[in-house]
Length: 305
Image 1: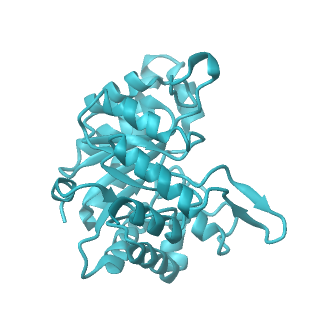
Image 2: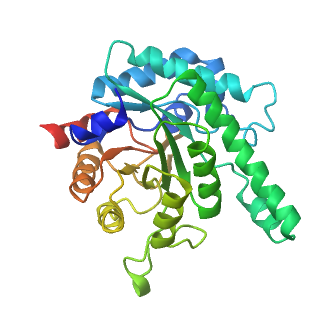
């Protein structure tokens, strides 16, 4: 189903976390999760199917870290192959349904080096921008040529990188391009003044991403779980574009008994926050780090029952 058509029917519910699901089932430390498309495709397929059974109307490909820079130390894996496999697994899981597949793209992981290059003069700065653009372009093409319904660029914390990623997508595909940012909790001295880790302000983000060609914007992950409805309302006041919000399950903690990462926000509380985010103006909602099929099922009940 096309995203525009789905949005005309109401709120779209996305899936939840893939990475934390894989980590808690034994993903080797430091291994990009996208490598699981080759190592354990059945596990990816199973997670996708569980989210669909929980009520997800859109699922993200397991390609969050399937870019050239993230795979620098894992050169045995090919960028195009990992992205292609990610789409194919999502399509297999959603076969026979109206569930949409969003091509998932995460940050380059190279922000500090990129920032340093920007300070080294015009020639070096322009080359750094072009190189980063090309990293995203490569992944966008790999995802779209295999067939996704939209591109979702997520967990971005630096606006200039987000703009380059969004441009790379918007200029190399005709499908919807969404970009979501990670925000920090504002201090009491500037309550409601949401900014990224690098200090980018909400007005600058909204303007910059729209100018770059985004057809949807929003927020995901981060420490502003309870503040997500307020953030959604502020963003809705600035644009009529579809808003995409993926809420995590709270700050990660290590369970020393099981040696697994746990998140404190349970399904019921997650469902409440998701419904408040939707009421504040979000068009597409879902889960991020720490969320499970149970969280998505709870969100489904809150939104549609």
